[in-house]
Image (cartoon, rainbow, N blue to C red; front, side, top):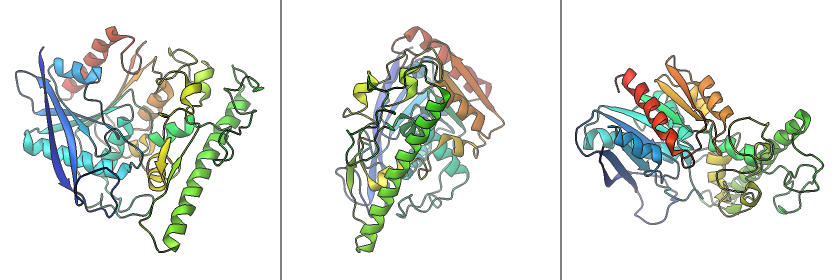
Length: 383
């Protein structure tokens, strides 16, 4: 089936005192979208994909769903391509504005959130706040009116090759051998699994893995404590809108990459979705490499970020589908299972696509299976 791609955008009001994106006037935000649909026919349902930093309108599954007859929209929040100063709460507002625009611009009656990868936790965060709006400030204490935004709940959520959250994923990938952020390349050899001299070799003992995980959480919390202290100092000095930028080294270090027995699946060992994890650990494209005090608290902090698929999932009531790609080099099977287990809806399903990688790049032959699973789930619920 032939498909057409229609790029469009819309502007919605934003009254934040602080601006974290380049360009554009104050008081409003431009959201860029693309609608991908069959070249003939209409639909009353739209599948709305989004991700905190967008950029997924050409994902294989997005295109495949359109070729299967679905109307798909990809929404790029204001932070398209740059999460340096990203605030998750503002992504929620952009997604909510997109849903409202879809219903007025195109007349869609039902909207299903397509939570691909990092879009999974954004979708869950959105749906939680749309069903139970509570938030009036960011984790840094800046005002943001999600409670009064009038968010329209989606009719369903699909978690497709999704992880629990950016904050949990960051923590599970943090290099615990970094004990001092001011000296990130002086590392504890006993925890440095990329150092040939590390005494711990795979398969790792349960005791070592427990110590490794505890050290990762401890490191995340040290950065969080420092970020809070920095913001407190700025406030105490009479400059509450001031911000500080910083670098976080070592954010692709996980025992899963070096020990296939950890979170076992069909994925290849000694690699991750960005390549060699040892190189990515300190490379320029690692998670949270460049960030800010406020952004750290909102998207990367283990304790402070509100975008968490497990905690948000417990509070949602709409039909939910989880798809787990068993050879995924980014979102490993335990994340899919934890999301499924957490979802509070009585109508929830999980499908395992055996041998599929994160993007279906290595196994494009499995893309039709995922497309059919999504289609069957949608059809069974009248979507």
